Length: 247
Image (cartoon, rainbow, N blue to C red):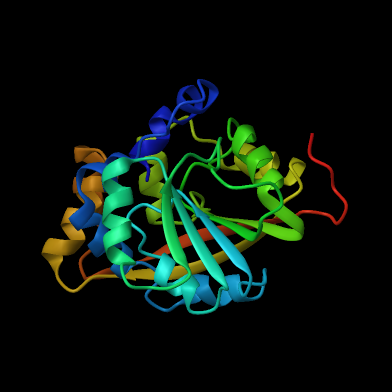
């Protein structure tokens, strides 16, 4: 997540796919990371109260589809959109045999769905990192039905220790600037703290090594004596007003 942001501004402004080196290069390690995240379910509890998840849900940057089965427990239909073809294939394997769930190749800037066709657009640590993501915000407005919600879940770089490690790799990342960008863009912000909990040290260290530079990963490993650490997130929510016309 952190290293992907190094290319964020230039990549988004060039309207290209934003690389995710962690999951693109180490999908098996990232699977273990997904299983370790939100050990207490705090993010899911927060999300349950900010949007109606029983309609049509679109997951932007769904990766290999880790969250799609969870959405499918309540949603009428779930669509994952992912720009990296190998991950699309992995996601299709994950949801094989499930009804009402699909995955397609596509990007946040050009969602392959019709206007006003979904009730919730969800993105978790994908694409929507701050200034530069305006094309994706416009696309979310286009595909949302009136009254629908865009829900963005991202890491809170202000919360230690994970946020401190992030900022060490991203010295130019301005937490206050990103917060202001989303406030100006009409989002409400909800902060939540949860835990990443791992089954063993080998898994914990492997995850930290795909998330950070070698020096920062070594520091993070040294600062984590056990098998878990707290991680802060922020959930950003913007609703599409009824009658909004997107030009």
